[in-house]
Image (cartoon, rainbow, N blue to C red; front, side, top):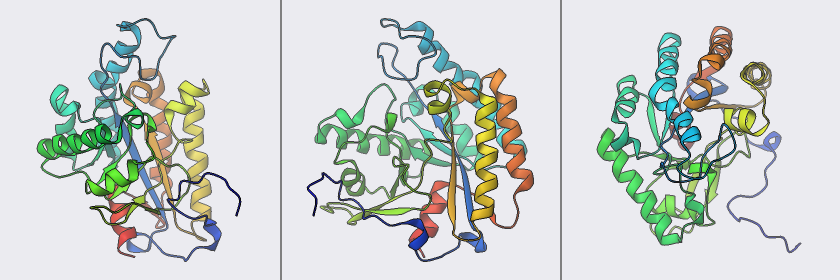
Length: 295
């Protein structure tokens, strides 16, 4: 055996070699929209930047991100309502205190709330194990108090995991995580199981169909991002006859909620909604998790 460091969470498994199954009601393509709603500290440097970061307080970039919570998210929610699309609210728990109207809006829609750390101004993967554990448990407490339901899913701020994160999540009672963009089907992760179940489910989360890497990383714009969504949907529709897949779309209100980008998002979502057939299940990560666990 080669001496190469491995995470030891799952073994290699080609998607073409796995047992076949179907989603709810025999559907084959599970599509979900994940809306990352984030809160940033005024005096920290973490977070996407429209322009080169300034010394703190970085008014330019802070205010640009705050636009997403004050304006962009409401434009997006109107579209989701019109298209009757469920979404997954990936919430920084700080919103429960700082912007409770956003939490309330998702609750009134009946959307699933997923824990997205406390704030995107910290990298939890850089914390000590005890501090990361305390943060994860605090986030669960805040979201449970605000929504009446404990979150089952977790997405790390900045996708910042430590080597202990799946173990901590399992111990804290979470059922699935969204940090790994390594597959198109859910994958079981082994955990230490000190107090947990001994495993936690990884539900696919996109880093390609994700507006931050596309717009902020590649410096491309919304028209191309919309075409990516359309192209992925068309391919998944063809391939899902052979194997069931998950297609996630990750959005941030400070990007796709901007007026000049919104029309492109609307075009892409109308396209996939209009062309969805009997094979397509518009759903949430929580429903994917529940269905897969019951197979």
